[in-house]
Length: 385
Image (cartoon, rainbow, N blue to C red):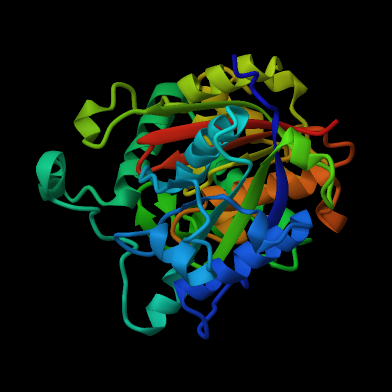
């Protein structure tokens, strides 16, 4: 009988962030992987698994070839579930490591979506497609932003959530970004600033939408027998969960419920902890409403209460539930899909490496990635000894 091994995140690294005009996606992958592997105290020869997506049809084979790993890999994956991809892949890689199929797995992501603007590529307000099931949404102008706006409108109508409460999510993210030298935007903003910014899709304004940046990130997962001898203290993967919901908006049973209701339930149960035990959260914040639905879905507050929950700076460093401590996708970075950066920031917080933005005595972190338009969710509970 195979006795499952404990699995930890043992390395984390980011590539250059912001607007990176002088590097391709593959170069950002290479930079992030090199930094994460060095952070773990490992070398390229230690890696026998790679999970990646985003560079092309054959990713992660393209990434493996570019960084010189393709001849030594025993575990390869490329999931396509949107921004939650790296939480999904972390779960799958951890399972493979736990069963002894592989020992050390690198997960990586990179994108040049900000630099693409310089080349005249603009995709932020386009439909994701008009084929198959999505043909029924496309004629009605259901862009990505408008789908989240519909969820926000429904939450406001059903629960009395206010536009000011939505705006507080963006204000808190910017406050956290102030102490992050890698954040794209660090200047403070107010609720009035958020509400007076350019309308995008009612009720969402520009400052309630994720920024567009370049950058990449990578994390290294390893089995317990390797993790304890490496350069940094292991950050244990204590619990995971994954769930999907819909592609067509008419198939979303409840516009106010994220599929993280199910992924979170599994992750917390596996970890043997509750939301009340969590010290710091890294939650996908493609839009302000994403955070509210995630807080409710994971059980940090009852359904309909997230608007009131975030009032008074709850999500800020020093608040009751420090969330997106690097500034999140609303202020720090969002290179197309952000799930990787949630894991990197959680690891840094649990290691106590976040300097001025460090959450005091952080021992347990909740990470939740969201993909598509609340189409997928994956939750991780991370902890240190």
